[in-house]
Every structure is written in C-alpha cells, then in structure tokens.
Image (cartoon, rainbow, N blue to C red; front, side, top):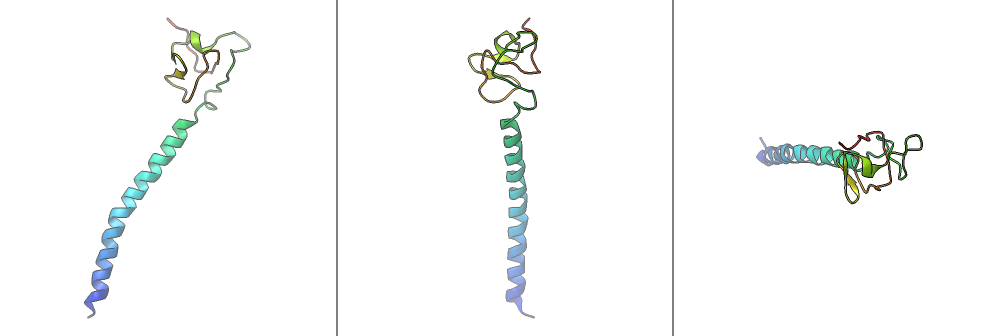
Amino acid sequence: MDRSSEKQSRKDALRTLIVLPALAGALALTSTVADAADNKAQFKYQGKPDAKTGHHCSQCQLFKPPHSCSLVTGTISPNGWCTAWVKKS
C-alpha cells in the first residue's frame, strides 16, 4: 500500500474541512452587507418630501441628524422621505 497518497488525501481533507466553512461564512457576510448597503429601494426612499403629504425625514421619528436613519441605510437627506416615515412624538 502506498502511504504517500493516503497522507495527501488526509491533508486535502483537512484543508477542505477548514476552508469550506470559512468560505461559506465569507459569502454569507458579503451578501448580508450588500443587502444592508442598499435598502433605499425597499423603502422607496426619495431625496425630496412626499408629494401628497409634504412629510420629510427631519419630521420622522427614525431620522438621525444630520444625515442618517435608524432603518434606511446610506446618506439620508433631511428633506427626503420614504414609506417607513413615522411622525415624531
């Protein structure tokens, strides 16, 4: 029996056991970051007030001055609006 091929197989198996879970974790993290990076479309964010009501982000409970939101990602205009708008209490 040739032991050199058996040792190589064990070595390859160990690499696979280590690399595959790490790769799967990296891919899952990448898709999560990408999804989180672009959720403006999900909430129909626009950089101007709502045409029907005149509501805008600076009047919203979720708005975090000067340019962010608790829910919508990225830079948010105080004059913008989205479907997650909630009146400040």
